[in-house]
Length: 166
Length: 186
Image (cartoon, rainbow over all chains, first blue to last red; front, side, top):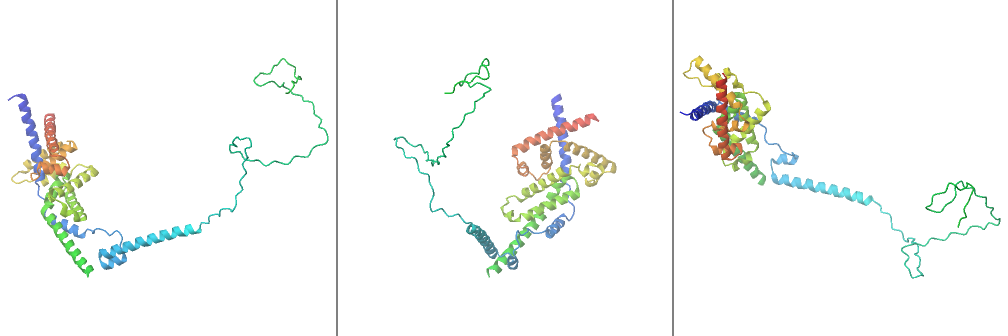
């Protein structure tokens, strides 16, 4: 006998040993009276519960016609309540009435033939009162010289020098 | 009138269902007990599992007529119950204790010494079975039931028949290794 076949023999023997034990356990007899105990347990077990026990349905004992009629009536009642509530809310809402006339600014009429580009006429304000007395202009004392845009101010010039404004 | 007829019909239907259930209990309670005991190895736990299985059947008794093979269906129910219980308990089976194993195993024509030795041997084998991976162990335990074919074992476990065979092959190899290893380490 070679080593591998000897090994296989041992392996099979071990597995058979285990299977024999498991078979022994599997064939153990059940205790006496197990059937009666199970039946007694089933008799005392609660039956399948009723989802909603309608008082009327209980008196008719599983009358499915009456049960469905009751369910339909309940569903109709729910629909009526919901719809009625919705109407109640809707009827109390007061929508503001649309105004009879609406002031719309008059668009500028284009005399030049160009489009107004949606500009609106701005009402002209009243002219202010003309002041009779001449206004005496105070001499300006600028700390910094006014320079042209984009040019840096020159620090060499004296502080009092003022350039002529255009 | 219709109501009275429906009441009579319901009562007769209920009685028929109860009779069918009682017949199932008479026919399969012992088989289910043995399946439960092979996993739990505790008499009262196994009986509780059988009770629970039939209670589940009672809750779904409307579907009894649709079941083709009641035996496999019931074994599957009790199998799931015992696996669930074992997972939750996470305790070792009662009969890993040698004295308990000696109590439940048949001892006709054996001396007390022989009985103790046999119990010790079986306990050792069962300890090795417990060390197998779940899938292999489940197939191994179910294959010990001679009344279950590989097709039925596959139906109970919800796998294919070829998968049952390959698992059984692996289980036997692993078990042999475990037993040899234990033997050589003694």
